[in-house]
Image (cartoon, rainbow, N blue to C red; front, side, top):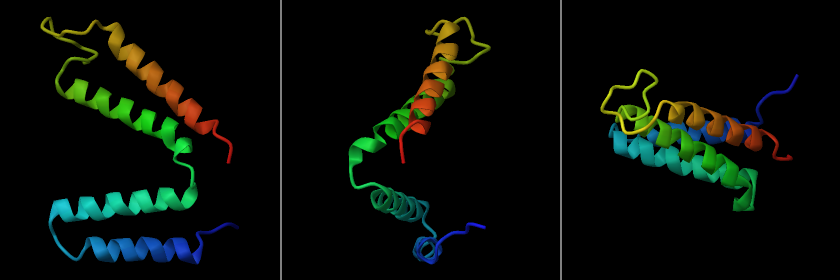
Length: 106
């Protein structure tokens, strides 16, 4: 049975402890973002391998922003600036990037 390494568990506990030093949402966001960057840096030393992941995250974030602005709603209003096919194309392209991320050799 595989389990998490001691170093990984210790890393997570230290991050949780440091993020709770202050109750500020900004502080916790900074600590968690920094921990995420450190963790990714420990996984791979070449930042090129993270390009598909970055594309996946950016496209997903852009889709959420468009949904929030109601530009990409599946039940779009008449005032929407994007055609209904934009919803499908965003979903398909985000899925394609996810498939590319999953195909990266370990």
